[in-house]
Amino acid sequence: MTIRSTLAASAGVLAILSGSVAVAEQHGDLVAAAVAEGQLTVIALPHDWCGYGGVIEGFKAAYPGITVNELNPDAGSADELEAIRANKDNTGPQAPDVIDVGLAFGPQAAAEGLIQPYKVMTWDSIPADAKDADGMWYGDYYGVMAFGVNKDIVTGDSPMDWPDLLKPEFANSVALTGDPRSSNQAILATLAAGMSRGAAPGKDSGDMGLQFFADLNKAGNFVPVSGKTGTIAQGATPIVLGWDYNLLAWRDGMAGNPPMDVIVPSSGVLAGVYVQAISAYAPHPNAAKLWMEYLYSDEGQLGWLKGYCHPIRFNDMVTRGVIPQEMMDALPPAENYAKAVFPTIDQQAANKEAVTTGWDSVVGANVQ
Image (cartoon, rainbow, N blue to C red):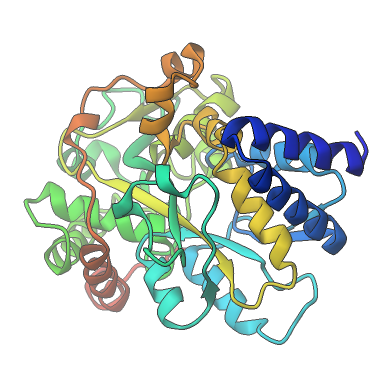
């Protein structure tokens, strides 16, 4: 497909969806400006995270005139903000145009002036409590904290709840997916652990979550290795605490070698929302805006759903009947999902402060 035909097709589709030629022309202008820039730089997007491999390929197929430059796929949310800070005056390939970070990092980035406002055309269908009113950041998808278990190593019963992880049969087995001093996923795993001990989300969950991991470390069950597909398959981290969508994608990728259980615990069921934003110093601002338009279109949202993430516009798309039944059938059973707690930004911020400042003194395990 040529660039010209891509522009025409995009404009035509939007004209049908919106009923507005003006909107279609506006989108066509954005596509033209983005193609003129010729590049989009993303960061911290592993291809097996939330179906991002397919999402990126979908964007490239829709806009073949734009090269996607992928920085540090394994970076954490704090690393993404640091990449913006470190490249404020750099228009080269190390400067990210867009970020995908944990909910608590959105307001932080806005307060520091690291991101810029932009409202996508599907703005009204994004829930109000999952977006900044001025368009600085907005929720993209969510999942729940779960346990991924290598059944070649854990041959008995899998842990079904947080207290099970402390049992002696899980010695040298339990890992996080990153450094809890900087990784949003690891920080929120600590929050979930605190909730499982009765703490409310916030500073209390941070404090009690730290004590849980201190107990896990003292018992000899905690493995200070950042868990991922390879470490699970190799048996270095037999049990990994992470988002359900990541673990389900890893399970599928392993294709039974080794077999893997993915378990949503019966307590401490935490739902985590991630957010998108455009760097205030984006070298390719129009490509960044076009990326956002793609992500928040039905096509982009379905790309995340294919990767087991619940896209932020999920309810709107269900209402309109645009989600294929096979995608709905592929989602995990609803059991325990109904217990999910969605912490507020303030609660996540208080938990994050407790975890990042207290991990070294309370737990004392250096996750690598």
